[in-house]
Length: 327
Image 1 (cartoon, rainbow, N blue to C red):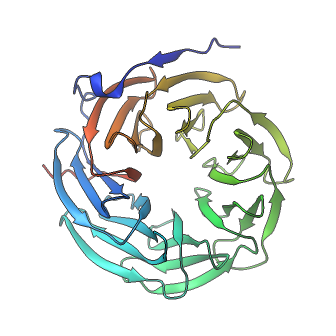
Image 2 (cartoon, rainbow, N blue to C red):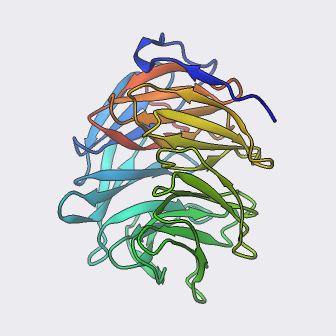
């Protein structure tokens, strides 16, 4: 078993030295400020700050980098909108009204990026929205309570939601056909990710601080990883070799060999509360929102080292990467 190597580093003390040849734009949602920061990756400069709905949580960007979508989750009163951002234009293109489908949160594009799946926690649905028109195309019932996050197989053959209060995962057909397949998992599942090939689902359960590895064909839990304070999100590198899980309570980001489920190492971010995560398309660079420090951490995936931090607005969470460079 590889020896765990935790890199103890304070985010605020790292020099601003970007990875070589890194380009593009980060789109970061600032929950407390109800804004989105557009950050030029090469310079680290915020080139625009745009308004969103109240309590923006999750962020997703089309593969071509043109559109960014933020889920306006709301605060005490549930939100019911999405904020559509024209990245090259550095502007809010549209506020998409979801009507009765309140508490929008998890986001996933169907292949082609013209249809967006968004969870509606309060209605037990995944709402499929046309982008950029904002028209609701159809809905898919999760049949479970508090469907929070959604993750999509790369070919669009299946999507899965984490259902916090039901302690389940729903397996759904993205085209809306058929009934949900329900998987039992440990209590309070939130973070969820499916491998691009669809071979495994990793689910973080907040109550027990564990990540469960599901076989989607059988619904059986075939492995567990423990020791988390709060396994907030799950992302995989494009080659499926590495799984990455931020742990805001533990103030670290953990890296795992996906096949063996052994830990490769961790990057400690003292006081940072790492939450939202996004990989660059080549899988070499990870960006993590540091909710408690109003920053984004840039991490080299191969060496698992923090290369620099970038300033954001208040309480950043959802984060997306666009190929488009603005500065």
